[in-house]
Image 1 (cartoon, rainbow, N blue to C red):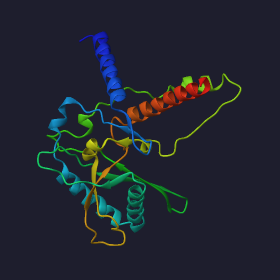
Image 2: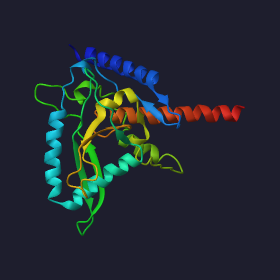
Image 3: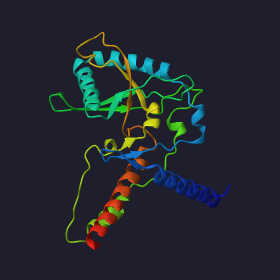
Image 4: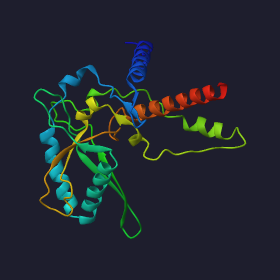
Length: 240
């Protein structure tokens, strides 16, 4: 296959993904955007990785128990995640239902006294056994929509004024369609930092997660969709 043929195939795939996004994006009663995951045709071949994720969870907890402050930080972060509605306890898996479990990882930010000041819990959507497919293997990555930094800097210098903005927890502002949440399951013994015998429970994310190969694309498409809708709404208000 020539480079030009490969390029045309890629452009066609991006066009199909854009159509998929526009046809599936929705709004919740709470006025949040609801996104669907862009599955490939091989999703039916996704592996059953619950045992693998359970094993990795045990290793993760053993490591955290060597530093009780880290264990408490992760436990607290997951509780906050649940309290804010970013995740919820998952429904049981029905016979024959496709599902996936995401192992947990943690990144800690400490101050000069080595005290934890920030904790980020990340899920690994690439987890799989050697002969099986991971969730990321079954998702389209989507087009790279990140802006060119050089172009941004040049544009920044052309005007007399510059405005910057930041969306807090931007990925987590987008909900995931309920039918897709079964692929975003994770395991955690809630309150284990205070109760060593806490029972391991199944949860699933309700929002767009870090670790998914499609998250950057979905996030930027969602932001652009919102800005375009806001532009149209503002124009209509001015003309009315």
